[in-house]
Image (cartoon, rainbow, N blue to C red; front, side, top):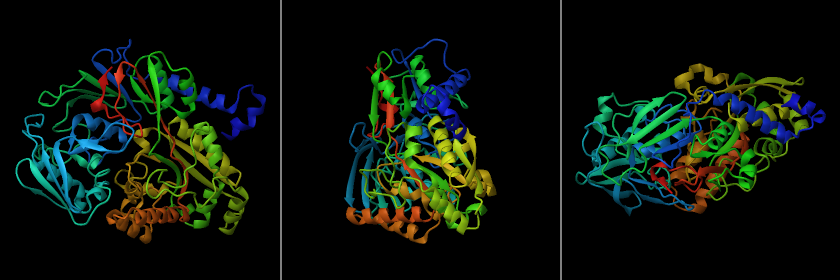
Amino acid sequence: MPDNEKNGKNLSITRRQFVEISAASAALMMMGSLPFPGTSAAAEGDILRIRNYSDVLTLDPAFMKSRNEYVINGCLQNKLIDFKPGDKWDWQPMAAEYMKQLDPTHIEFKLKPGIMWSNGFGEMTVEDVRYSFERIANPDNKSPYADDWKLLEAVEEKDKYTGVIVMKKPFAPIWMTSLTGNSGIIMCKKAMESVGGTFTTQPPACSGPYILKAWKPKQVTILVPNPVWSGPPPVFKEIQFFAIDDEKTAEIAFEAGDIDFTRISISSLENFQAKPPKGSTVVVKPSLYYAWLGINADNPRLKDPRVRKAVQMAVDIPSILEAAYFGQAEPATGIIPPGLTGHRDKALIPPKADPAGARKLLAEAGHPDGIDLTLDCLNKSEIVTQAQVIQSNLAEAGIRVKVNVHESGQFWVLGSEKEMKEKVKDIQLITNRFSSQPDPYWYTMWHTKEQVGVWNWERFSSDEFDQLHAAAAVETDDAKRDVMYKRMQDLMEASGCYRFITHETTPNIYRNTIVPAMTPEGVPLVQYFRKA
């Protein structure tokens, strides 16, 4: 970005136009490698085409890597309850005939009779529910989602279909996270045991309306109706999920008639709203995502908190929002967005950069001539633009940055000790973006000491943070939870490991040949899509 900015005065196009043209050109180059058919067969027929922002890495709910896998699993598997489509956060029964809160630590449920597993594994029972929840809770399995069921005492069986979830203590987030999220997905005990207890891209059994027909790495995941499904007949004869990392590429595919539903880039939102493609609808939802710059506390160059805080001070949030989001996103004050318990009114560090203050901190830390660092980012137009702006910001403070761009399959394991071993400490700066659930617990759970080397790539470590995270989970007084979660974000920011950027917004576009179902933040619930 610095070179482009330097030459900008001699060009007849604006900075905004330059970013749009560059992104569109890159998207066109990528189109040739995508597995789209030669002619469009949109959802007017029996095939539904959905764009996912990354490829499938694993469909095992205990180890899923992204929201895309959750979206696909919504078609393949059941949960006791699911998010209710609409503009208000609520839940509805899925595999459960009913759910009843008996007291603060006991929830009774009854399964709908006749939910069958594919591949001849019989009927879903309470034993499958118990197995699925306990499997995630078991620390020996090292599921990154173990916190969702950390307070699980047992799943008691009354009969084949009726059970009681028993918690050790009241667990405030259970209805909007553990039961409705990926940790609530029910897997077949017998089928899982037949494959050694885990899998990646080939589920051993499915109980949902669809089953997996094919997975073509980095291309497409294809689902077809489940022959043993006993619920309402599936609407589509085939659902195709295309792995398209970049929104600009997805927009071109949509305009060509090759996909029916996709998230679009914020930079394109204004144009699509003013002139949507024929027969399409644009919808904008508030977002639960949060984007930030992570700073690795365990990297030798960043061990000194003064260096980390210099990085924080040198990053200019307004310029990132203008360049990457075209002014259509607000600055984040922390990881928890507006509208949720624990949202802070303002961050500790103002959004505007202070390069002089950053240079002073660097000098105090023994770097009067500045410092060289690396910045890793996902190969997605908005995120690459973020990285370029950050590179430019940091240069003003004497922090010289090399940007490393990664495809999704490489990026999402960079901080994982399981895949990368000791190389995780090589990370210095990283632009990151997480999805979440509508409870603050799901925002803080990824930043505990237990998550270091899993999803805590900044390797942030705070005893007070962990204690507050545990206490807030069992606190039923919302005002007290609010204070706890605000303090946790103060600790994150004060560590020098985080520079909060934005919660974005969620613009989607779809063809009028379908009636989509979405959560209040715009995540597609494809299992509830229907034809117009």
